[in-house]
Length: 338
Image 1: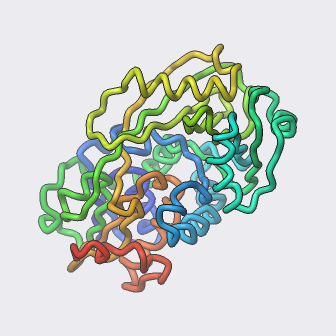
Image 2: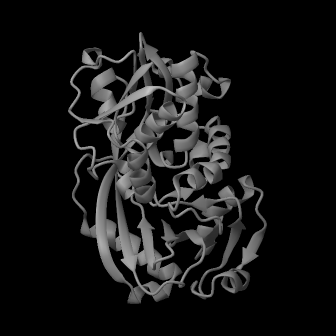
């Protein structure tokens, strides 16, 4: 079977690689197959199924957890993609921050930790931190390494092209996984949600765990890499521009330094702006669209985490026509567009 995948981001590439592994003849269409315009390039790579998304769309939790369980095998098959299972420390600076973060900790059934207990685990944390929790099931991966590995798997199967109409492609089945660009190809309600992310660099070892915290009402996450890079994110703005702002950078740096003062000595190496593909309910769209067309888009904040299960579910659907019931709540038809 010949399958065309529109979109060379992390989700589209993973779908293409899974279809190829199962014997399909795959072609990936992307206007810039070696580019860095996708949300994956900005993403920090937190694999955190118990975050805020489950409160917005409770049915999403089962999908997130199922994909999180697939990540160890998925990462191992790709090689060194920065996969790390040290876990996440949730932290809160003030009493109001504790009240905000406690909802997530309670939902995840995590035992609360005092500030001193947190600093025993991560000495770089500020002595001002009041409380927190440790989540051992949350992980991280480097999305840029994942994309490079997937590009290697699909080498020679890229067509550099801007697809204007799905019907113009010659393949037997078409998967539209073009992120925010999916809206123009399908009419599905996918909007760009702007996010600003910083990258700092210093001596390795300042942080071992991912830090997910609140500082004076500002939410921030810090994702440390083995080479000394720390990814700091992220703003969430209902805007379509790609301009970094002084306010966005200030808010991220202030919260990061409040939680981990030692980051003040790190070099600010990158300020990046990207767009998460959001839907009206901020849950993904996965499933059969119409005729020979399938959709995998709108993953919003969870694109990296949901990559393995999206690839598996879409490949099942395209090759066998059978849909796993786990995607019943995420089909294109829920918006009346299919």
